[in-house]
Length: 292
Image 1 (cartoon, rainbow, N blue to C red):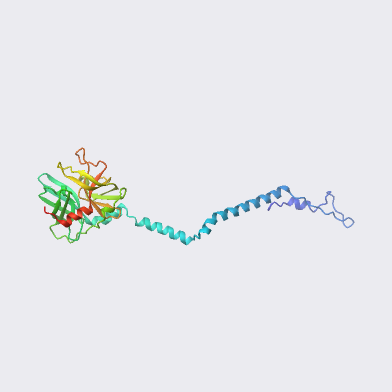
Image 2 (cartoon, rainbow, N blue to C red):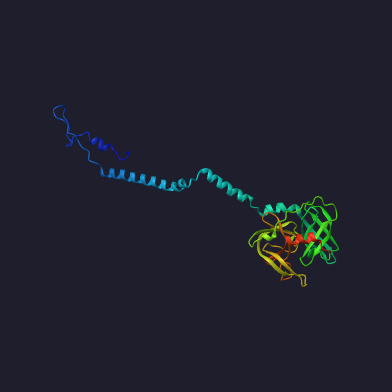
């Protein structure tokens, strides 16, 4: 069958209407008429209706694109732009890769044993920022640079009220790589951040989180009346050994120096929040170089 035609209707059209055979010559053949097949007409009508509906649907779907003038080149360009923006967003791995050459492990030796903390190179002069409480009362300071070089550290300046100390290597440290410094004044609550330190002696450890508060005033845990002012609050997991390490933004720029964490149990465990001195304040201390 093809479009509703069948062989039976063609065969019936060659026979007389009364079913008798036609004679040769003395009788004119009667003209037979074929009555229209209602079922076939309905099939034609249905096919036509479906075809019309398909054309309308396709036209309706294409109408917005045609009206907006959007081309395939426009779509390709938009996709490429989105991918570029995604690739440009720094991840924690990117941040660590950028800061790693500037990391310093700080070991302070004193009568009470060893204190371990982090540090970061901040300029071409080889100055290293760390937390003051890491090196307080130390009789000697050992620095381990990112390339594994061990050297003796000396104190350049301190600010106990900010919990910041500025160190430098006694030996030639021409291989020191300064970190890229960010602007802590542009931070917003919810910004992604990364902290790098040496928790529990695990050097160069990275953890990530967000800024959870700004301009916090925190009582020192050293048993004195010092209140650290204007600190960055974050939810990055830190513990003993993390102090003095850099706090980074998503681009791997230093925006703070990790200084303290609430310690209600006295066991030095992370309780959900930590604090850092904004880099704008810490850099000011390094520039002023107050007396020790």
